[in-house]
Image (cartoon, rainbow, N blue to C red; front, side, top):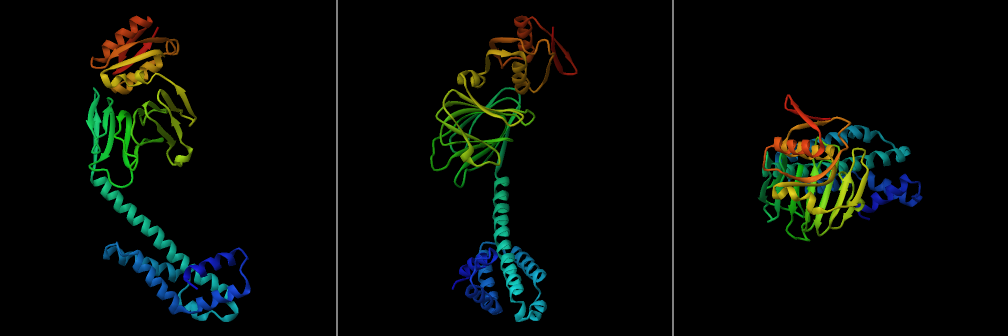
Length: 333
């Protein structure tokens, strides 16, 4: 039998399903220390082929320490035939130790190397004030709203194209079914193969929004599997609230992406909702008193102009007052 066959039998033994013949076969195999050592050496050689020699030494030393801590050689020599069940567990504990270290150290090593490569080739663009437009290495176009940031690599490698967003950005993604495009935010991932959509995910905000202009996107919570994703159709908006409630509603997508053309088009929105948009875009703090926060308005704000002009317009339209104190804007009656 092969090593994997013995491991399969050991699992049956743990579940009290192994026959007497299978248990005897396990004990005989484990009695052969040379066989175990030979197998461990082979596994080590296979696992360490892509690891530099200095790191190999450190990992190998840890494996030896792990095995020694579980069952030192002096202990093994003392084990008598009468304690063969105990021996069975001890020897398989050694195998488990080797397996665990190979698996987790191997994954950790490749993850660490991948992270090193990722971080060393990452670019970060921060938009201050007016929105910033640029093209990613795959040809996808991005409009980054004021006071937002986007991280992306010099070159997309592997099976996906991933960027990290804090703030708001509008994407026109180059179609590629083999290498999906993923926008990662603090709370959600947005996966597409080629489409146009807007993502609003400021780290200081409690809500996340995704608006689809064309094509389709999958939106799913960070740390969750994509099988749980909400699939959007054009003119739909995904909303994640502060208590992690997910909803999808019908919207006019053109209204939400108007900022890419330099103006904010709002339709029957509350002063509080308008203020939040202006806060994020201009990087200021706006406070609405309770007696004006729910006043609704429709209109258009030129984002290329100073915020004071937008504030004056809102004062006239909604018959409210706005005072500025310590760079904070206060709306009230």
